[in-house]
Image (tube, rainbow, N blue to C red; front, side):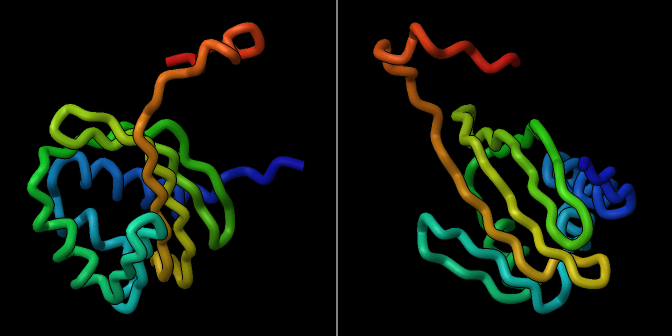
Length: 130
């Protein structure tokens, strides 16, 4: 059974990513609870609290752009798949957001750079559209 998306939370996530793209840091961070946690497993970093999350993003030296591929979820767990372009170089990202009372209390972000498909899989693979 497919559960329909929760429009209020889904709309808030869309607003978050639009604000990220526009550089609207107030709206970008309004989705987070004051005591939210942001984890980057690949670097082993944890940022505790909306103010620290905002501070680490605010100091980013690269020009960034956000393209959302898909937002899916329901209830208190939502996933965004996107491509974040840093100074013209795309990085695929998955953001897992856990909500409590309408605010993100824990987000985990995973990042992966694109890589060429090996020839050995060409006979069984097809290109992802887009």
